[in-house]
Image 1 (spheres, rainbow, N blue to C red):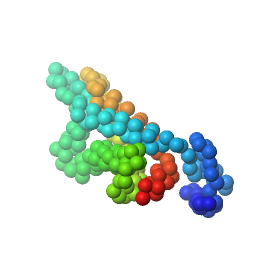
Image 2 (spheres, rainbow, N blue to C red):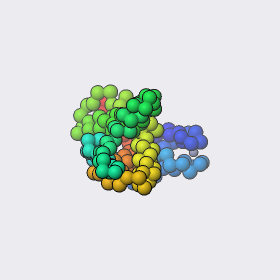
Image 3 (cartoon, helix red, strand yellow):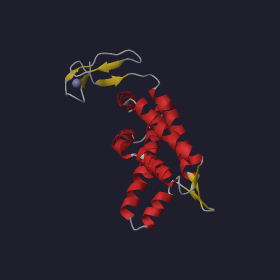
Image 4 (tube, helix red, strand yellow):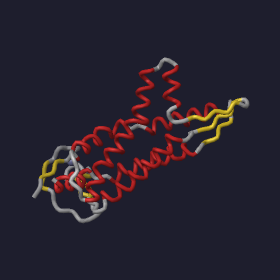
Length: 199
Ligand SMILES: [Zn+2]
């Protein structure tokens, strides 16, 4: 029988077998230790593929069209980064570029890199390293903050210019929700168990 440690209160105890869809809670503090889902890999893979399509749309098309006294301008996701750089805020531009575009993309690609071999039963290369990258990047993919910034800008500019939301804004909002759903569906315990079986 495997030992399991509670991530909240450090209690170490023998892990009982749990039924499909049931949660295992720590007997001391009540934290959810793991949840067993047979379709964890399949569900997460579909969500990651959907997220990658939304990511492409969110970055390739304009977020907003601004009409300021007859001057129309399309705003892309990368526009904020470029504007920060132009205003001599290079450090901030790099940070925004990382947390809103680069790190979410690396996280999605790492998830795809782990999930594809598990789904097809291939022997992947260095899958545990990719899984660690997913873990490390988890707090650094902060597209929600960027979205909040866009919404604040829309509210502030609404009285000065006419703003038309474009396809990428909807794709970006959907991407945030799909990535949150992926994180909620991804059971690290199930993934690590399946990874150890492929080796
Ligand atoms: Zn506990």
